[in-house]
Image 1: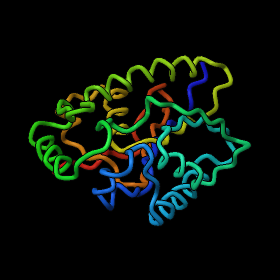
Image 2: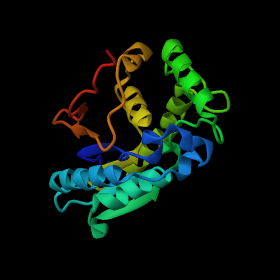
Image 3: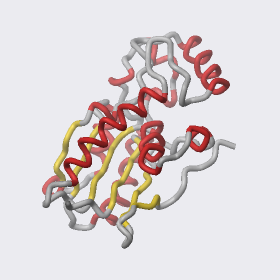
Length: 210
């Protein structure tokens, strides 16, 4: 088994939906692109990743959403060192079709009171549903790790909630521990680093919700 030395999780840069909630009434969530600021965040993050990976190979798992694909392109990683695989299970939590902005705001308020893990959007998913997707992805990930030539780096370009749920599943956090943490900001990363004891540790914690 060739487990990677690093599993790096990246949240996409700032998107159109991050600055204008009304766009969800007109444009599907998966089709939202990056803002100019989001592109700048991705360029900056790319410099950090190039310094981290050096000339080592990278296996990339990519959410199929437009904003995550744009983020990966803007990172500027050497394509000769990257093997890219689109992974639909790394997509954002589904809200379900086009949305009414007032309903979005009401549901977000209800989710804050109910809990992000259990609250289910009317036509979409709960955090628990996304957690189950993460578990299914882990089966693929561990099969890939079993290959003798798996690269020393795995890079997941995904979404904030997915990053938090990935770590919850990996480190066996409780629901209460998950709820006490915030998603990383746009263009931020977290890295799981393989230690000499054969176990991974998080390079830095998620910020608390309070």
